[in-house]
Length: 49
Image 1 (cartoon, rainbow, N blue to C red):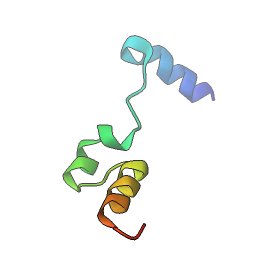
Image 2 (tube, rainbow, N blue to C red):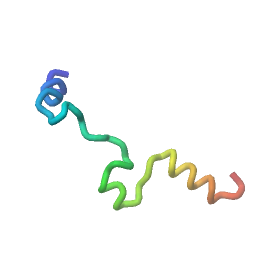
Image 3 (spheres, rainbow, N blue to C red):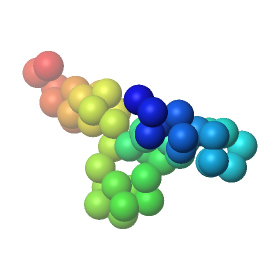
Image 4 (cartoon, rainbow, N blue to C red):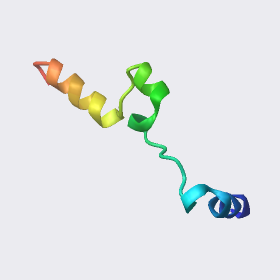
């Protein structure tokens, strides 16, 4: 917990970078989405669901 506090104090604007999948360039390059988005896409493609 102490290391997180230190990082928060020395980090610019006191913020952490986003940890969401849709904000990651590497995940976007691999065409990986949020699990909710992937589920909605799969349900839209499956006519029996």
